Image (cartoon, rainbow, N blue to C red; front, top):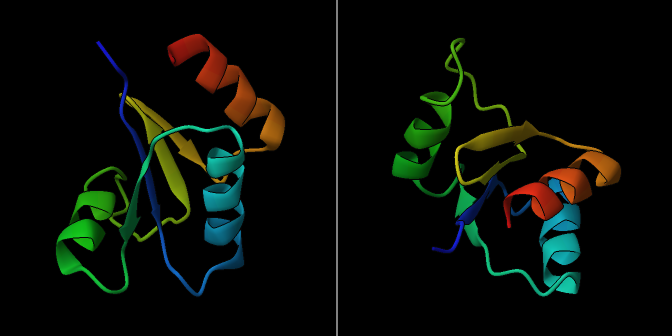
Length: 82
């Protein structure tokens, strides 16, 4: 079973771009879900948070939600879940 990685963000967001490059550098398959260009992606992100805000970038690794994680936290969860 492979764990899915989803990156909720926006093209204009420098942190979203940072995570895209970081995941690519690690040769990880992920799905980029732009929350500004696609309302379904925005609604999916809102549903992850009690306050229903567009808290991006958010990375989902399986069921684990990481809001703007540090490199160390991201690495820890990738190693634990992948």
